[in-house]
Amino acid sequence: MPKRKLIRLNAYRTRFQMRVAGLGFRDGHVLVHRAVHEPFWTFPGGRAEIGETSDETLQREMMEELGVNVTVGRLLWSVENFFHYEQLDWHELGLYYLMNIPADFPFDPAKIVHRIQDGDNDLEFKWVRATREALVALDIPPYFIAEEIENLPLTFRHLVWRDGDLDKA
Image (cartoon, rainbow, N blue to C red; front, side, top):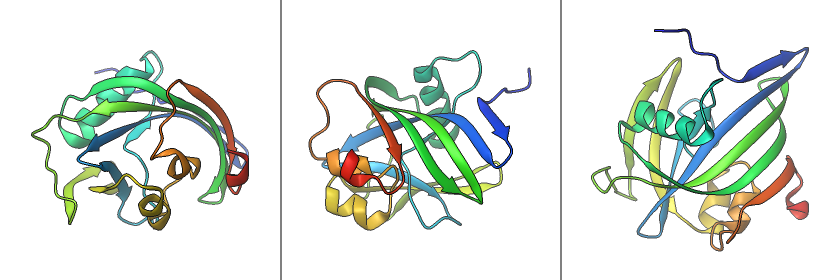
């Protein structure tokens, strides 16, 4: 098997990456995940690899992390995301899609529904109410999504997002 080539560049104390994530909904909830050592949650997805399309990235990541074939829907946002994490300044190109998760994937809004070891990270997945209030309470970057979760854009939207810029979304 050829070595994977993730789209990531390091330059001094700055890192660039391309990340693809999906928003999967069920019964008024959206699926989120986190590395158990982190205080924040994110939408499931991962780094793109050279030579694959963004929807292929999302399908691959969901097979690796959830063990299911998702159906990738329309692109909601492309985001030039700038943030500070693990003592580095990050510049991330993020693509956020709607996705359909198969009905046989567990659904229980009261508990963690899935766990997996992904490299050095223990990941856990749960369903959370798809409301601004619920996402703000979770601390789920990029933060503009909490503002739009109850009224998703009808057409694709491009943003430049810098941590702390909620008023500019």
